[in-house]
Image 1 (cartoon, helix red, strand yellow):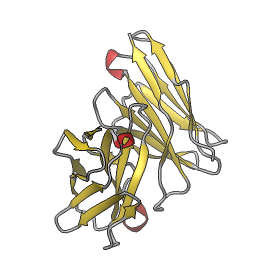
Image 2 (image 1 turned 90 degrees about the vertical axis):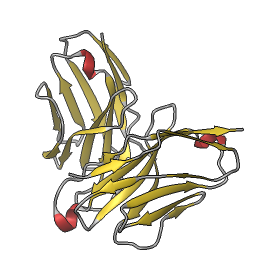
Image 3 (image 1 turned 180 degrees about the vertical axis):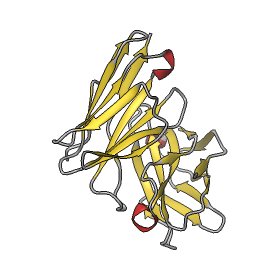
Image 4 (image 1 turned 135 degrees about the horizontal axis):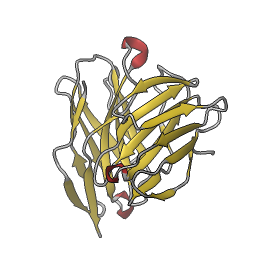
Length: 119
Length: 114
């Protein structure tokens, strides 16, 4: 079974600065997807960024970028120019690439990390 | 753009009662997933449906059942409720199976069992 680990339960960052959230995962599969979800106080789950394992290039979405190290099974999220609205719980998640190897399409989440942004 | 609709948004029940949660996926989405998020916890997968058939099953108690209807909406039925069932229940939808499509989450139903 796949597991996702977020070892830092909480982090804080000053507004306009950069912060990196770490995530490691364990899998025996060769093809899969990795995600970062944001959950603000409203509890809505919002997709921040997605990485496909077969793509070597790290995904980027505006101020959000990832550092995907497949061999190390590491998937960190970098938030640049942090804004007050970035304050939320952040969940790292894994999903199998079912089309190529069968298995489940469920999302497997890490325990989450609470990010505080200080003005 | 249309989003995933969940109803009710809040539900309060007594122990041993039953509850029904409803999920209306985004139009043309044929796949639905249910997740349970306890207080301070990460979401846990319960069950999923593709084209009205169960496609996967997670840690869903036997007291719970679910189905997907012909219009693709889904219902999660929960019986003999326990205090530990208090949680936020998310429904997510996507189009197709076996694709790299995003799962779009609904706002969740907050269930409180007293």
